[in-house]
Length: 299
Image (cartoon, rainbow, N blue to C red; front, side):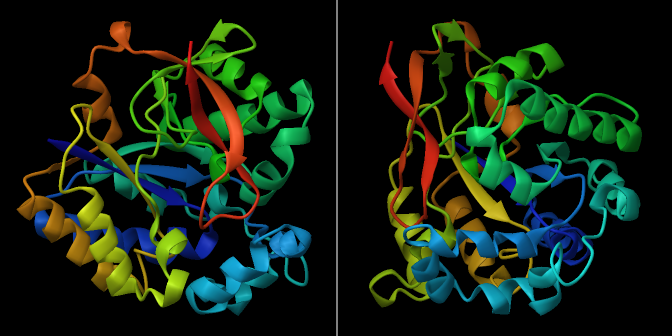
């Protein structure tokens, strides 16, 4: 029974404060994980444009965005210049690999990708991915082997370019089991989709507290699928004010009998040659605004 922990690091604050907290917490219970980094500028403040997106304001109110991200972060890219995460926090990123954890690419500019990639041209898509790929290599001295898209947002060019960049596997989607994505008729890099809701998708729904959300997640993992689970957490949430709730989850999953592993270890435990092929769709997901890349019908 394996449950892979996928840690998305979205912001400068999450990199500087959330990562060290998570390294200590994971180490205290002997849990492994995969950290995916935002490697360019932190332009979190530009997310204000989402105010017109259906469901965005409700999510902001439910999840206390200001409390979790801080005012300064919410001004980056608007009233304040966005700090270059990869350039200013290279030592913090390398510390993750030095501690023995798998690392990979989340994005270059989180907001630019999450809010723009669906409409981006092939050239623009490849440019953003290449910049993140090159920055990662500069920091770590080797190529990244895993990609996990910001906001679970992708386009056809992005799936195709993952193969060009040599990723072994990716986690860009939501779904129920590992699969080979088929995009425009072409098989792409294997996907380990996020299989469980995130805390911010559960907190506040029908008045659910963070503790209620943890109980809901543990109820969902009582029965383990043969191919394991992938849980996505955020350095800005579980690495900060939701650390206590995350501790409850870690210990609860271990009590249920799960090995808490990196995505690499989960991927190495399956036979990628026999993975089912599925189309990828973009659809709404409860607790999130807009649409997300999701595992679609089997091909």
